[in-house]
Amino acid sequence: MRRAVRVIAAPLLLLPLGAGQDRVPAPRTIDLVITNGQVIDGTGTPARVAEVGVDGDRILYIGQRPRGITARRSIDARGLTVTPGFIDPHTHSGPDARAPDAARRQLANHLLQGVTSIAIGNDGGGERDIAALFARLVANPTGPNIASFTGFGTIRLHVVGNRDREPTTVELDTMKAHVARALCDGALGLSAGLYYAPQSFAKTPEVAALATVAARFNGIYETHLRDEGSASIGLIPAIDEAIAIAREGRLPLHIAHIKALGADVQGMAPKVIAHIATAQKSGVTITADQYPWEASSTSIAAALVPRRAQDGGAPAMVANLKALDPQLRKDMAEQLRIRGGPRAILMVSGPHKGQRLDALAAAWQLDPLDAAARILIADPGTSIASFNMTQSDIDAFARQPWVVGSSDATNGHPRRMGSFARGWRMFVREKKLMMPERFVQRSSGQTAAILGLPDRGILAPGKFADIAILDPASYAERATYDRPDTPSTGVRYVLVNGRIAVDKGQLTGTLAGRPLPKPRQPEWNCPA
Image (cartoon, rainbow, N blue to C red):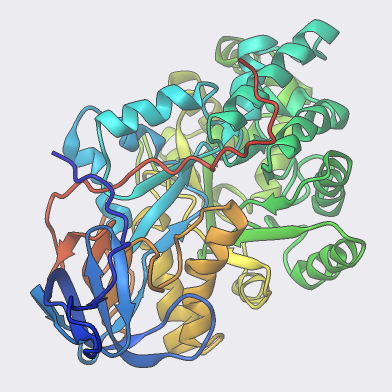
């Protein structure tokens, strides 16, 4: 049985009945105290040694323990760092969150990195019926808290289908109505993945029309750019498109997993940063998230097959690949070049998991493009890791005050198990690219502010008790491209809504996560 939310309203000190007497402490036993830890509160302010008191699902105090307080349990955090639970703004953990299996819903990959809240529905894949999603999460709780976007791709596919055409006026109005309903039911905003078919068939004004609706309900526009390199319109034009959508829609822009992807744009991070800074100065609110890995991950279809060959969905694509006409072969060869060639493509799902495209082509005595076509025809959904980013670009984006951490968690890639832990190891402990306080801020409080999650991401009295306690010397990823499912190390304790989800480094099986709908405002004109 889940605990009811407890509102901390009772005073710690009570006035006795006798007039003129001094106030005396009222004895009180609370659930937990965390002692002797180095507290980093998520605001960016300097760390300090302080005690944290937790009762029910809220933080009761930070600092000196009020007189008369005792606790049912005490955790000695000497030598450890106490932080807000981290918030992951970009995941693909929706299938796990919705799974009937409680072990999957635990989302151990997030908890064992100290992540206590995640967003799902990214890249345009968010559900249309947000109310039904949250109702399901109430009935079948998860390990971390769950917030969600509604998806441009999901809505467009439902209304227009898997076709390269513009919506009719009636269809566009229907899509707008879906966005309004989802935002009123608590979606964070509208996510898009214009890189992917059939979303790639949409022109800019269509997306802007839906973003304008999201803006009416305090939503944000979160996007996987139409191009993160040189696959279609180019990286800078894709950023300009996203800025134009945000400017026309009058809502904040959040760029998903910002990067410079591929041989033609490596080293372009400084130019991208300067370009975004110009737009920010003009009044557009722009933030982004990133994961600290040199390999991206997507489907091999998205990476290599031009969108015109995907018009009509997977069956049409397979038919085109079986024919593999000279123009399609030429276009796929160009995409493979951009991705770094066949050696840079690692299969991370399906029967060829763990093998690179060049090795498969050699084993089959095929040209790499014919090998790719064989894989796609057999399984159009095959996923890959693609080694096409540089560490210098990753570091440059990490330094920006408007960039926060994320995982883009997908199966088969180590980012699912280790992005936050790797970020701490690389950026804080080894490279000293940022102070611990900045890392925690970009992993918690700043992310909560971007997503619009009240009372999350900061350690302060009255806030929800989402807390991570980690060993700063050993917090690190262990997942690799060969062993992508290896858990991270260094997280000793995790609390979600005041309940212990990780105890002495071990999962407890507690499913204390809650849905996190964006609060509805009274002035919103929501559909009936």
